[in-house]
Length: 316
Image 1 (tube, one colour):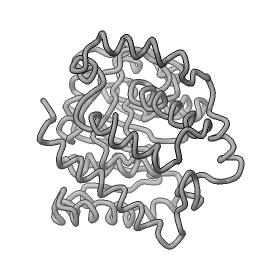
Image 2 (cartoon, helix red, strand yellow):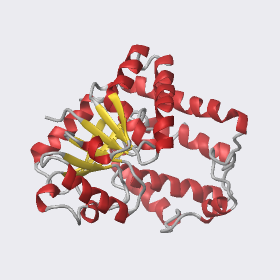
Image 3 (tube, rainbow, N blue to C red):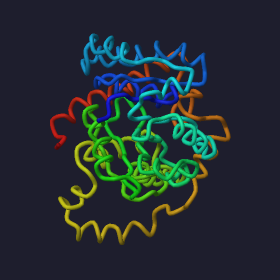
């Protein structure tokens, strides 16, 4: 049974993962190589979880109890000692992850499950330097950002892991309130990111062609497809509309839609101009420096409202 959890990397994704498991009652060891990050992260976690409490998703007591369950580490061996489940949220670099998992294979007990939060690097590549026995206890567990609010977790089941081990990991995610997606093939982007990129490709293409202004593109998505997607998946939407209709519309539209296999030139131009979105103050929209925190809270509050509402229609 998985009881002790270690999270490697206290950055954007790592500390959010630690929060979720701590809120679910698990003792969590949070590791980072940066002393500066370890000094800052308690305040960041307190702020994020307090915002959740302010919006009545959890209580302030939950916040304090969760923080008490999280212990910070700068030493890797100490951070993973006695762990039943270790998930890394380190930079997307294959060599780095290969060496990390090799080290973890040596440090962790044989039955400890080792997981990666990656959605772009193949599991087979990350397992190259571990023992054959350890490969049956390795998987991808991909979270969406922000990890403490998005209710999805994609869990790999690529044939290297016994069903019983997979179910044991899935159980801790269910206890933590996550909806798990079993991914059966090791493909770049897994499931959710591939779907998201399909939508994004056409959104950027519409902008590139000048078909609509940014505000109207956002409105079309939010109050059109995404309005249904908030509660209903694409396959049910297709069934409800009629597969014959979807087939006809697909024949009519897909041949004239974007099918490029690289990032849109408009997106690349924005990056080259340093217009990176919220982090730079401008992307497709403007984000005044003095309003960044307010805008982030507004964004996250929408997720909290949706998370609350989802409890009414999520099926076990």
